[in-house]
Length: 123
Image (cartoon, rainbow, N blue to C red):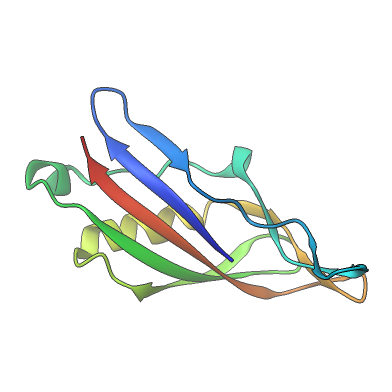
């Protein structure tokens, strides 16, 4: 599942969550296996780079990121660029600050690669 975040830059910037990570078990009826779940209270709103605002740059970046068994983001990479390096870097920096409830397999916490999209929009 992909989480899509829309980053708006206006008089009052807002972060709109268009989808959420599923907290449901990986297999129906299998409560011993589950996907990682984000703690949205731990996430900082990504900073819209000043140069991108000045140049009216927008785009969508798709990140892949590895959530450790303790819920921390160990690694993040750009799977699909927004076309603007500063927007891509801002998204990578933001996801690294989020905490997750780790995925589990057979009831034990495990590392898991996840995916998220940041949609950068100026309004």
